[in-house]
Image (cartoon, rainbow, N blue to C red):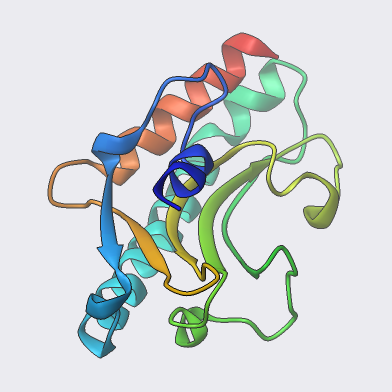
Length: 154
């Protein structure tokens, strides 16, 4: 199970990003954790908004229009219209900072450029979660690094 969860947090170059995440056993998934996830997603939303504003002109200068950065949520891959961080303790819930530009729809391209925040892997018998570790990492810097990487690659 851990190997499956680990694969979800590999970046595009195949380098592990384990040091950015805390593995949370199912026995520790509770209301206290929910408060931390809600806080993390709120921080992600604030950084997304400010970085979208900061990088919009840079992307447009490079010919990449319509930069959008947002916190994207889904359950088992389904982006439900009213899904919020309140459902973060449901199995297969995932939240991530998604980056999109050049007219792709949110649904078709939401998972191409992203940074995982929280994922609750349900598992067959026992589940686990992986939570971005704000105590050891700086989310704004990680999002900016992803944006800079995208500007160089594309």
